[in-house]
Length: 368
Image 1 (spheres, rainbow, N blue to C red):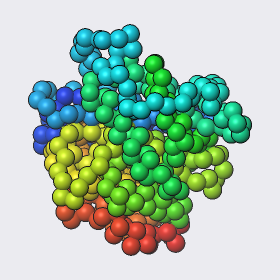
Image 2 (tube, rainbow, N blue to C red; image 1 turned 90 degrees about the horizontal axis):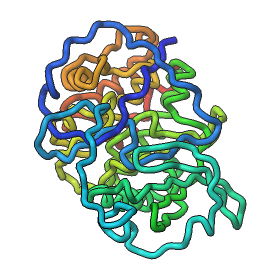
Image 3 (cartoon, helix red, strand yellow; image 1 turned 30 degrees about the horizontal axis):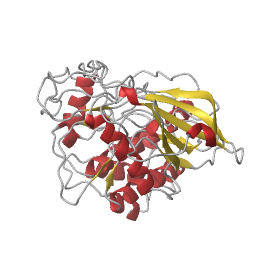
Image 4 (cartoon, rainbow, N blue to C red; image 1 turned 180 degrees about the vertical axis):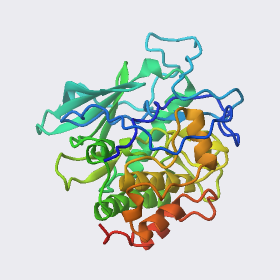
């Protein structure tokens, strides 16, 4: 089996310029061969870090001037005059007093480490139930935008609360050092890891997962939220079983949007970013593109657009041709190919919406 390539380079903030028709410099045409398998080490038994504030597999740009840098070249944070030992430019992130997280929860071992903080296993003292606690260090929030991103992430998580396939937030707490987000614990690992283990899914199982993924996109869009960083690493299983529920995480790059609103900041992850995002003119259709990329990978195990470096990947996203000839595509139904093709139309106006994808009933689901 051919495995999905290793994880995309980590999410960082990059200077704008990526959105030109040929990001940075023109990439060399890719050879017509499958990318090599680079499965990462097996996931730990407990949940991976449910990281959301620009986790290390995505990139974002404010859209201001400057030369684009590959996402793995993280620019250094400019020096900021700090007003306190915490480094935060404002007194409070949450703008309200909260209980002490350590009074309600006992923090345990570390589950993961991200750019802005650390996620720990935590146990509710009153019930003994296990959760994940992401602690975002306030000294890492050196700009007003950083602070606003954390506030918006929390707001969006509460806004989407109750959806069975969205990670649920238990509470938000703040002390002098950090903001603490207590969330449900997903101990089944990433969708990414399961794809690596399997090589690819059967059409029937891929359709089940696709229905969950696109269902989340539809609900987000109906509630005025654009995720902007959909990828297999941002879907976690609640446990290790084959039939475990799938949960969407990482709303650190997510935004609220109004119908017809145009966004210009370049955000996302290289393999999954939509072409119109690179061109700095996009809306919620970009999420459908990313979901289409995930479904393509579920079906065959490799990304549709790939190259040896980020510039090459962006060039392929903008101009590359979908491969439906290499194995296992000859044995995959025309219905599956057609659905993926219509989710990956480069013109966002012609692309299927999340609602239209679900209305198609993912008609390849009966084909194995």
